[in-house]
Length: 334
Ligand code: GLV
Image (cartoon, rainbow, N blue to C red; front, side, top):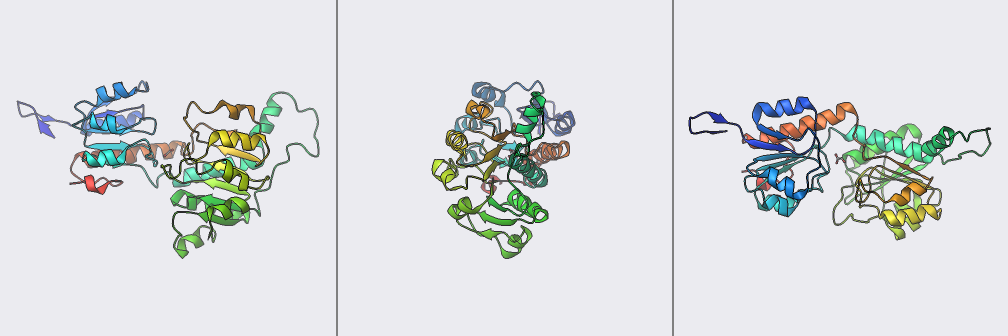
């Protein structure tokens, strides 16, 4: 804290870029002079830069692009705390160069996001939303032996790409379905972690795509993972396979996926994330073999609150001289 000319303590100024739980705003206000955006307007870059002037910290989320330009335009900024585990909205290298701490909210959302991966997997394999639309449209006149036949989940092979904490939580859940698990990850897991993840077996990406019945994407987005799943990869998958994306838009080439789904190259997809969301490719809406949700993987009440608290605790630590618990760029902590 600094003092004004009369010696009164001045709280550091922070910006909360989007609406968040009022209790969290109240908590932050105990430590900071908070410029909050509870009206939830989505700031343009110019507005974000304007609002960041004089701010020591920003409480952000993946809808805010904290680009190098935005970062360089905020000379007093010392901490960017994201309310998300993913942080591809932040140019971490630019933040580090400017001596700004960057944090995320790992762990608190692992189980909820894994639950949601399974929600999408089951709904996709068993055509839940497609058949519900049929029922709601008043088209259900009689039972048919072959109505909405899907693909089995139990006894099948689950392929997980990105075997971090959420990927392992997804894999663990497959034990009850008597599934085999194969995975692909930058590096092979320690044997005890593979054992916990339903004895997951490390394979090449190509082998995974060829042999899995259900492919779940749980890896971070980066330049390296951009369009990791495109036309060539989709062509390797079984025509009966499903693809589930609970990671980030941009890992899948959405136009190529729409082509593959239209041509029956894979059976179906369950997608919580999209390229250029929320302005996603409207080609998906023409398909019946997709389950589409608006980026809600971690959206249980208690988990969103835990993420919000975690981001607040990171910001409070960062601006009071303590190392934030979830610091992503330790070089910035002095
Ligand atoms: C949500 O997408 C997150 O990264 O936490």
